[in-house]
Length: 305
Image (cartoon, rainbow, N blue to C red; front, side):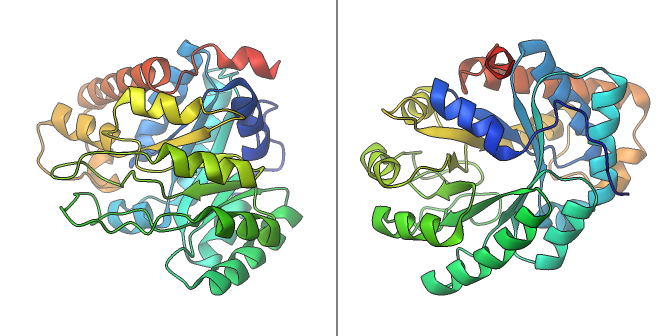
């Protein structure tokens, strides 16, 4: 499925994040880990009058069985049929395979992330530049990562795995790749904090901001205290303007279903409508809470008029 005519409120990452940076709020980039949970994310954002980013990744395809074309189709269906009018971005998160990125662009994603952060610095630049050139030729924005954000999949360990983003390298990376947003490693981690305490190196973040002009992205938003996030958002000259949230949503989904592990796309398709609605309502409430108390983005849609 190729989307040729996008609704006017479906935006690139650049436009949405530039406004967020200027007005010191962050846009939530929510990973539903289920195509049927796209709708409650958009409904919550509409209700709170907040810009929003809906995303999935290469990893979600493998682990949950998500299909990019179906995910995109659901995003555009909900926007059209439920009259969603807030600014919305359809984003491909952490992806290493160029072919997956090309597929996402083909089926209507408006933003993609190339993650070559595990590569040596120069190789990261080389890989990222290739994606930027291709995506920009298609009118699609690109996020990339510098530094390594700690994780052991979805559960944290007591080992400090992070390789923090170096400000001078960030400056060079942004200048040479022409990316539209930079995911920085400043202390947060993917997954849940079972052993380590969440932290954000505000001083490092300020140094990165002083040397770069693109919007900054914080991955691993789940489990990080709201006051810590707010401080990172509101640093002088614009702090973090995109916060990724996935684990908190999945935990609510699993809890509502009284499950102990993740749910695949096939399993979602077999759930009774009543059960599905119950989970969607729970997810919608989590997203609303994050928008209001975490991202400071309630009523942010008015900035885009």
